Length: 186
Image (cartoon, rainbow, N blue to C red):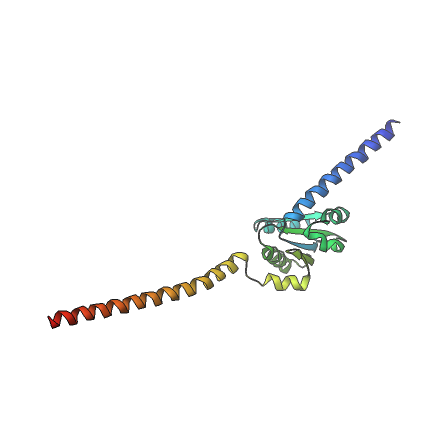
C-alpha cells in the first residue's frame, strides 16, 4: 500500500509540475511578438550556452520545450499556428520587443554553427517557414524603421519651414526696399 501511495503522490506532483510548465509557456507564448523554432540536435552543452548567451544579449529567451506541453500551451495564443511544428528536438527563441530581431539573432547564430537548424517561426501571429524568416531577418529593426519613418515625416516639415522663412524674408526685403524708397523721396 505504501508503494501505491508513493506512486500516486509522485504522479500528482508530475501533473502539478506539468500544469505549471504549461502555464509558464502559455504566458511566454502570449507575450512574445516573435518566435523562432529550431532543431538543436547535435549542439554541445557549450554551444547551447553560447546560443543562449548570444540571444540573451539581444533580449531574447531560448527554451528547449517538451513538444506535448508546448502544443497544449500554444492553444489560444499566437503560437497556435505553429502547433504542428512541435515535433522532434525543439528549441524556441522568444522575443518580446521586436519580432524581426528574433529572426535576425537566431539566423546569425545558425550561420556560425550549422548544427542549429531553423525550422519555422511565428512573427506577429503568422507562421513563417525558414526561407520566409530569412527574408524577414533582412528587414531593418523596429528602431530603424521608426527612425526612417520619423525622417520621412520630418522632411516635409523642414521643407515647409524653409519655404515659410523664404516668404517672410522676401517680405522683409520688400518692406525694407519700400522704406528706403520712401526715405529717398522725402
